[in-house]
Every structure is written in C-alpha cells, then in structure tokens.
Length: 254
Image (cartoon, rainbow, N blue to C red):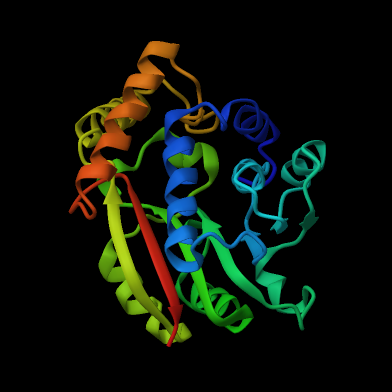
C-alpha cells in the first residue's frame, strides 16, 4: 500500500472506530496478556505499523515500551502525529535496523501479503532472530482467495493465506505455530458477498482496476457497532473457527 496516501489517511481517521480494527486490536491485546499476564513493561515492536492504530491501542492499555517501523513515509508521519515512536523502514531491510535490539513481542499484521515465499521466509527468520527467550510473534493476515476483491487491489496485496501456508513457512524460519484461527466466521457471508460484488463490477467495467478503493470506511454507527458485537461475541464463544477473511496466528521460536 506504499504510495497510497489517501488510504493511509482513511486508516488514520477511522481505525480506532471501525469494527474490524477494534477486533484485531483486542485479539493482539488478548494474546499479549496470555503470554505475559499483567506485565506492561515488555519491549514490543510493531513491524509494519501503518498509521499507528495498533501501537496507540497498546499504549492506552498501559504498555510502556512500544516501537514501530513501516515502509511508508505517510504512515510514519501519521504515527508521529499520534506521538508514537516509529521509524521509516522497508521490512526487506529489517536485518540492518538496530541489529542488536531484541523484543519480547513482535506484532506483524497484514504485511506478509506483500512478500513471495523466499522473501517471506527471510523476513520471518529475521523476526524470529529478534525475539527474546519467551518471546512471541503475533500476526494477522488476509485469508482465502475467494475473498479477493477491489480491496486487495487498493492496498496492493499480492496474495492471501490459508493455515497450511503458515504451517509450511513458519518452521522454515524456526517458528512454531502455537495458535491459529480464521475470523470472522459469522460475518463471512456478508464479506464474501461484498467482495464478489466488487469483482463483478471490475469484470463488467463498472469500476476501474486502476482506481480501486479499499473497504476501509466507516458505516453508520449502528451498523458498525452491530458488526463489532457479532465478531466480538463469536470470539468469546468460539476459540477457533474454520473459515473467515482473516487468519490470526501466535507463534514462538522453536
């Protein structure tokens, strides 16, 4: 998504409100609590931090040592507007960034979709090298090609994942998958309908693939809150689901 200034602007304005980001932020927070309990002094890196919504959420949860890196100057500028510690960095060059610094937790959300297998294994290997003993890598990624639509074009995503992809790639980087789940199962029919409609519009020429727009927009308050409640309730009642437009994972070094 580097170079899409308007998409970063949209993300910055609404990510603390939009149901999807709220669920993702809470999922990361829950994974950190399961790993570290009530500690809030761990060193946490958000690799591919975007406009800083995740870091801002963690800061509001009391975490005190937060760093972020992102390959977009627009995204980093928005992080700085939030008063966050973020640096401009192409994740392909992560090995040269503060090479001796290690982290208790690394968050890497919706980043892997920009890497082919060899580049992704190199990134995962470097992320694993940066984890301290007892550390954890938390990642969310877009899932299942059936959900591909205009949103993927807008953000520049080149691939989607299924669990088998992570099971194949993570061990190659010395990482053990401890937990994976797709989400949100209950909202999948609605998301699938929207994405299929987007694909039909592109095929019929009603929308141009050269001017795509993402799904990052805020519906009415009632709709947004309803979608949040559905996804939130699902996660409380079902720890793992077999289908969804996103794939959440928690892993640690082998």
